[in-house]
Image (cartoon, rainbow, N blue to C red; front, side, top):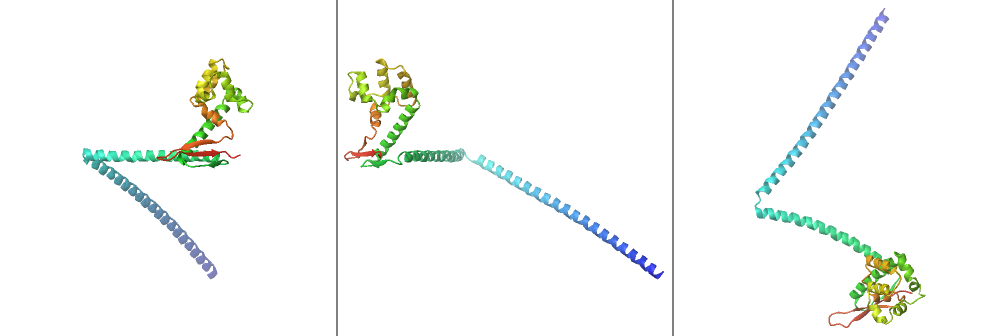
Length: 254
């Protein structure tokens, strides 16, 4: 009996302990959940209060700015508007200068590539030499595009391009009494017009239209004849105040 009574008391004690432990754990969980909920609510309230404070501050700033602008007299308001316009124009012009810088860098790269293997000698007149050089490169590019972009040009000018015929001699023979010097004073469009008038190939009209579209119609023949000379040197005279003209030559590398 004593052993049974002891076992019973032990079981009751263990059951009471388990019950108290479960109640304690449940209470702890409840308190933790309540604490977390309270913390989340306080955090949300704090964030809402911060947003509200920020919006009120922005609204107050806008109100003060509007009041300040309204308080400006006509002269002050005009000055402020002028200042704002100047800032906008400055930004636009700076953007334009940046675009021009990129264009200039691209042009310099193209020029450097074109002159990479050239043997250039400059004798005085550097500024004039550079201007002439740029125009010469532009002329060469334009002529290349003219010939490559027109099947008619390649067909008609084939013998002159491959060296099997002389452009100046053929032209002088066609025009009869016109001298070589007079031919060089003609423009491309005037030359083509004379050739068509003298009964030349009908495709010369198409060639004239192509020359106009490429901006070569008003180009003097002196530039074409000078550019077709292969290895012939070109001179670019440079003149300064009270100075003797100084030549500037660019000799292509062999």
